[in-house]
Image (cartoon, rainbow, N blue to C red; front, side, top):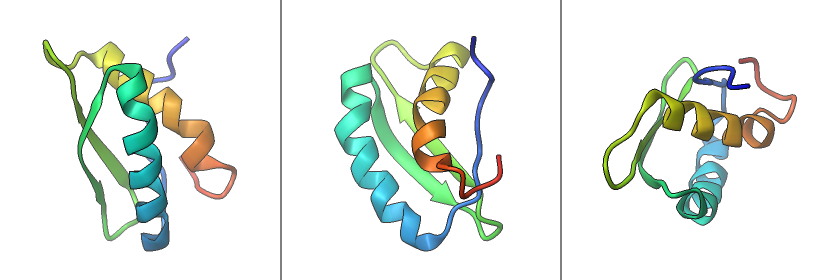
Length: 77
């Protein structure tokens, strides 16, 4: 069951790790990492694309893919 879009609080050092992980894993799910943003408040926003466009279900799939890896117990959702 999808839990909906996920946002986490991250540090600037996490952004490089996130980018590398995304480039390795998203293509296997059928998605392309277009961009991501780490806000001043520490919220991570992920921008994805795929052939045919993105649906809400795609956002939930990618969110659920990242949650256990990025969250890792260190960040608050």
